Image 1 (cartoon, rainbow, N blue to C red):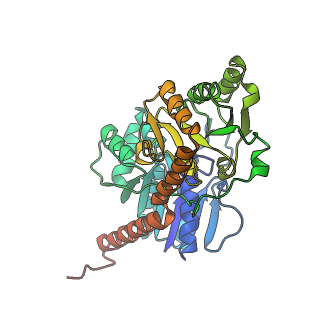
Image 2 (cartoon, rainbow, N blue to C red):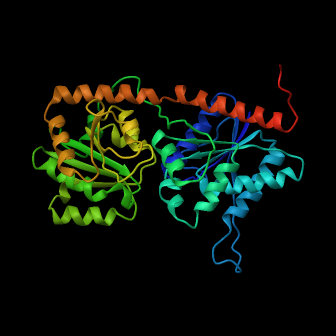
Image 3 (cartoon, helix red, strand yellow):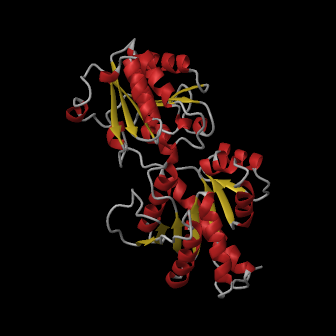
Length: 386
């Protein structure tokens, strides 16, 4: 099939998942066309069956804010028409689904019918979608999509709770490529950050308020009072200065290391003993899954889709949002017991394998085929066999 994938190309989870999905589909022989405003960070170098179409927005003095949605729709018309795509798969409702709908209607006037699938990743529903100024557009886009998917059952329920849609929403989880088995830690790399008897705790995110960075530092401070430990913070964002200030106030600067933005977080996670994810809300918890995929247990909140990924007392522990005492207790009990920690590392890796690309990819392929066939039937191009 020829598939157009529309995504945000940044470090966020939706962009990573969309890029990895496209790469996996290309490896299976599908022709993939990425459409976005800059090259996705995880796309890498030249790949067979992968094409990138850049959406370039000109700077018109008339506009205070540049009309990306309109330019994206025009680009989609061009790519669908001349690359002869079979289907569009848009990740994130705003503005990708609305642009896809606009392109679909334009193409209809030219005798071209192109179905599109909308995948909801989280903040397009839990944050943006709750803004009343966006609600009518998101509801319309959901109802006009040929199919809608969500990355977790929690997000599916949130969508039905907040939007007036009767569109069937299929849950297709995020996926990960995990280790076959636990690998020995690269001590040469690890020793650059901590001595052998010091535990490494890690958090990766975009440092937005919803990630509760203060809780990360608070939990680590409680851990470090009981166990020699270092905190590695990978990523960057508006709340980084909060974490820096807290580290100074708590006098733990020498034990808190800001790694900054990292293209591949697995390199940081592979030297870690524990991962902390105390978020206010998470539609799925991809950061937790990335940690588990290299055998790192997770201390997390029990919100949103996280409990669908992190299994309490198996791959890690769940606590109520803001309960830093419980998170710290769970972390300390695990880090003080080497046998138990090793067991949880193995169980984390085993759990991550439930979200392998080999299990998830066929779900998308089946959906693509069914949507394309249904569209052909509705357009009279294909007759249903009795």
